[in-house]
Length: 466
Image (cartoon, rainbow, N blue to C red; front, side, top):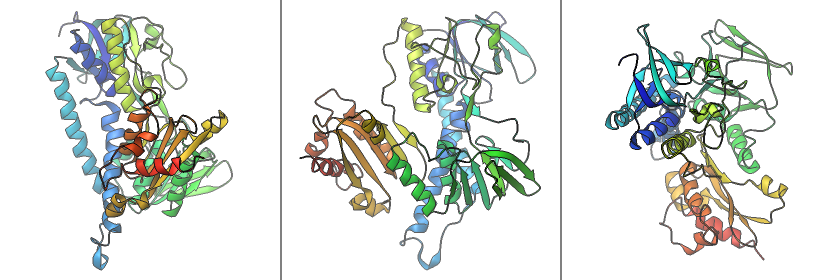
């Protein structure tokens, strides 16, 4: 590739957002290059975030399932595993995902360039290669899809070998008996489930007054109770004053005057957009304090020929949404306009043990808006399928309008919640009058299934009407 190489579009970053954009653009017949700073494709989602954490969670869930099933653990036989034991499962999934995604670029004739990109001007990037050389390439348009990384405050020493973030925890070399997780957002709660499931003493420091406060209160309370019941110690409304690394662990000094000691610390409080090495000042772009870029409804930055998608633009910061945003950018560039938009009700999938998933409004939001709603519930412990599988912790909750019976929100806590939610989402997204709770009463579900929870919850809700 010569120094005068020119493309129609250059995509920076090969995570879900970059992949969605690159695939859409090449299928539209444009000459596309994708630049990836790591030595394999997939981005943070595949290598450090979504994929490895969910693979670890799956392994832990299966261990818990085995150890709690009287069929398997007769005579006090049980499986014991450490965090390092189960990392191998995550690595095998990452390898499969990477090879699969590499194939997408090869089959679609998308030029893949490994190196670190930085802007020279609005039509040129310089690529720093691993061998120390640099190369200039040019394009009419650019898509920034560089993702995000864990936020690292300056007063925390991440060079200490017992202080981790959600990326470096995947290189954990020792097996802690006690871990402190600082930050009880989605990532902190997911790792609290993983470590506690492995029998590690787990302290969760929450800087807010309740866990995952964006969730429906009942769901948040259910997670808190489940953590408490499994021995996770939650400290709400706490912030660190200092974090002291010792020879054999860490001591967290809290502003409330408390001290906490453990073998190691996972700092999981916030993320930062990966924009600091792009030399954006050369094109007149200024990220905000979290490294994120502002875009319009076409995913266009303040510079007309530079677009951005995924974590680097902030909310909703989901792999699923990033891929869609990438596809939409391809439409905007290829057709000159957007044919689609992100769905208004994006489902949340939180891979704690048990899972949490929700879509639509919470009870608190509906009450504040004075919407006359009713609730239909189904407890998993009453479902034959959950009893068979021993996954009877959890429930499904449907919120619907008292008069029109339109579905307004769905909240699920329990095993397979992130799958179960999509059944209700599909009906909720229909045009009226097809989007009502009546659908679940008037259709026939396979029996026994977890999906049957919808029929049970719908009947329960309709019985409340008078």
